[in-house]
Structures are given as structure tokens and as C-alpha cells.
Length: 139
Image (cartoon, rainbow, N blue to C red):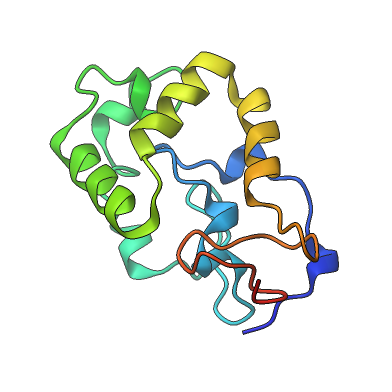
């Protein structure tokens, strides 16, 4: 699956999901067909698991001022712990660490770090968190 590397642009804060996932690095966002706009973007079509996401639809999340799980009275809830464990095991990424960085640095400084972390050094495309390589050049 090839993606045009010239389409790389800085991540938008709206691409950072409440759980700490950077939707800009997600396979569903990066792919050409049936592309997802990101968790916070109210566009269709979204994958069924995104629409039914217990975190995105959490009543406690709606009560936060930041819009992130770190600001929740139940943080980290059981669902966040499970998702973090899955992402650490499968994708070498901790969502809890991401959320702590967002809280500590602020969203704009966090985005700067994300841009550096997920930009392909070979072609300038975006490295996919779910594949572990750039979808533009496969490196």
C-alpha cells in the first residue's frame, strides 16, 4: 500500500484522540481507501470500532475540560489500562505515557515531538504505528 509522501503535513491537534493515540499515524487514517478522518473528526465513514469506542463515548470524558482521559476522575480506567497494554505489546507505544506527555508538555509541544517521532527519515512520509514502517516508501 503506497501513500504519496508529499502529502505529509504536521499533525493537527484534532488528530490526537482522547486516549492518547495519534490518529495521524493510524493505518485507518493513512490508507487511501475507506479512510478514517480521526477519532475527533465527525466525518463518515468511520470504522465500526471507532463509532462504538467506549473511550470516545465515555460520559466521564465529556466532563473533562481538556478532552483527554488524563483529566478524568477515573483515570486510568480499566479500558485505558487494557488499551495501553495492547498498544505497548503490539505497537511498542504507551497511551498512558502519551497522555502524561500531553498533560506535561501541552498539546502543541506534544505535536512537535510527534512530528519528529513519526516522520520517515527516508522520504518524509508518515510512519504507521500499526505497521511500524512508512506506507509511502515501506522503510
